[in-house]
Length: 126
Image 1 (cartoon, rainbow, N blue to C red):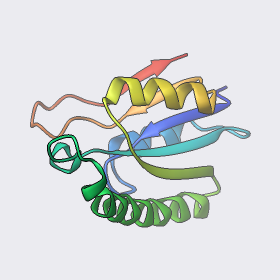
Image 2: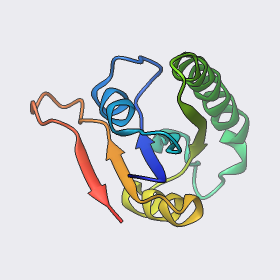
Image 3: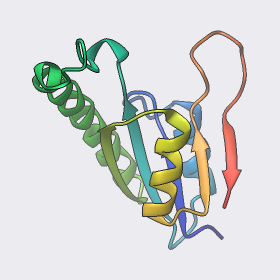
Image 4: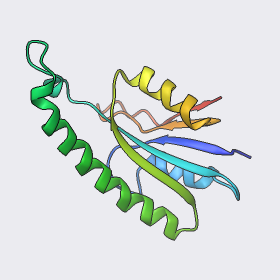
């Protein structure tokens, strides 16, 4: 039985494979923590000045957080204990490692890449 499953999502679709796998694995007493890692290199900054893009980054994260709440509401409607957040962070591996530590997750499920490789989701145990 998993205590906490960290699920990296891509968008608010409840049918995405990572969300479906997490829902199947979640038992009574399992907390699902949904995470949408947001990063767009073009919004990192210009000539070292990251402040000029901060309002745009904040707006992008807020929009993704709003979509996340729709997904959280849907999953709670299925009787799952779930929380969710969207954050601006990168690189992906370091962001995931930070979140695993902060959430004390014992399972991580990552959404499949959207590059057309046909790869299924990745699952990591802690």
